[in-house]
Image (cartoon, rainbow, N blue to C red):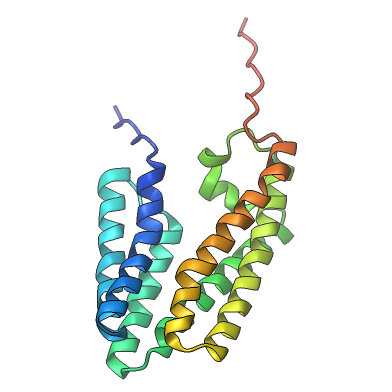
Length: 196
């Protein structure tokens, strides 16, 4: 007998995804970038542990973020160079964009395997369009991060990253809802005919 699947906890999932970045932002504001980076590394490690404990799993996105935060954070502290922690979002966005484009071009909507429970009823065509849209979004975010990194101070970059990018991502996600609804999001699954 298998253990029951843990119930979905959207509030906890959002906290685990965005909490470490908020910790980084707050500690940086009250201390400095290097102490903030240490706090970021500790917070993302705690997020992985809490996710495994409370949700029974760690999302691929959280694993990727944790690996890159610890890797680039370690370089930031070791080399005493804040640019490494600024490069991390570009790497994440670039990897996600490449993976989603590869899935789209080969007819495999990779987002379906990550988010299926969150988009119940979505058709295969809807998954393909959603994967394509997010592939373009992540590519645009990688470019935007590099532009912001090259033109803003670290303080202004971090503020834009925490507030601007988060709000823009939520707006982009909401803008996809009409397309998702057109392709079956929220529809009841077709009834299964009785056997015999």
